[in-house]
Image (cartoon, helix red, strand yellow):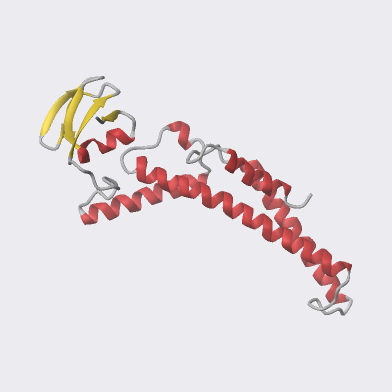
Length: 200
């Protein structure tokens, strides 16, 4: 059935949890590309056959014309499915670069879900953002929504130990300890799940 593999690829992506990646399905992706090549070759073959018979490709309405049309439409549909799969994954990867990649390496279990090209994309995107921020001397990753107060109360979820200097103060960031700190200093730790903001 034309387009079934491409449909499976898109369905696999859409059935995943929003904002999370499944492992890149390289096998299915390659099978869709193979199907695209088959459609392309069949399309070219039918067009050549019509030209050899002296038929006008645009106006002749015979079986070869409609066969070529089906292969052409199937090819376009498969390409659109491939682009949707790659584009939507790239959006999630770009979000990861903004949320986590600017600060530290991604956890291994997330990196394992990337294809080789996605891994390069993530590294290049993160590098470009870091370069841009260093040229401006500005962290554009903090305070995507303007805060009401520059200081927030946080609880440490993982033992970070002592020796971490945030702005102008050093503290012992033992597990379950609470601190009143600048939002800009702790945003990276909150994003990585090492601290949580206490509200109320």
